[in-house]
Amino acid sequence: MGLFDQVINAIANPNQQGSAGQLGDIVNTVQQLSNATGADPSTMQSAVGIVGNYVRSALQEKQASGGTEEVQAVVNEYSGTSPNPQAVNSLFSPGMQQQVAEVVSQRTGLDAGMIQQLLPMLVPIVLNFLKTGESSQTDGNPVLNSFLDADNDGDVDIADAMQMATRYLGR
Image 1 (cartoon, rainbow, N blue to C red):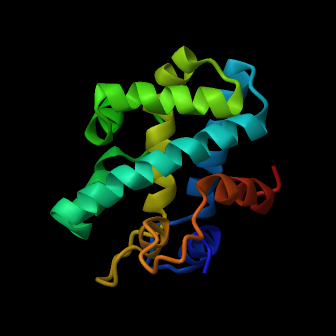
Image 2 (image 1 turned 30 degrees about the vertical axis):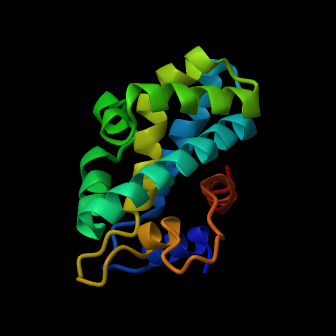
Image 3 (image 1 turned 45 degrees about the vertical axis):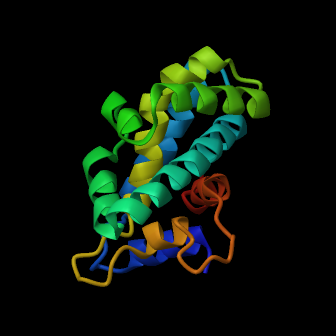
């Protein structure tokens, strides 16, 4: 099951945190970033997707060293739609932050300096997307598990999930 399917299931499941309002806040924030930077919305979604790939790698490292509980704690603490430099620092060293900005710049044409300034917005957005699957029960977070590709099928792309969320919400 794809990442977006997991998000839709979380929205439909009263035992999970996800809601259409939460998804709407994420999509609105990405659209506001597009407007503020003058970037095309699809370019900004691509930027979120690239950052999401780096977030996945960082969370996979945390999972390997501290377990799924540590990863869920990071998601819970740093997710949101407001700027949070601590979210970036919890996942990336300063050198890695620069590398992420350069890769996003190379792939999207956006300025690397601007991307580095946007990381405190982009990382919490990715984490907020993952938080939709948080459960009030003990069966874990299927959205986070899918994102971390727990079944190793390789089918994970947050940019595609963002595009589907935009279409799902009719925006």
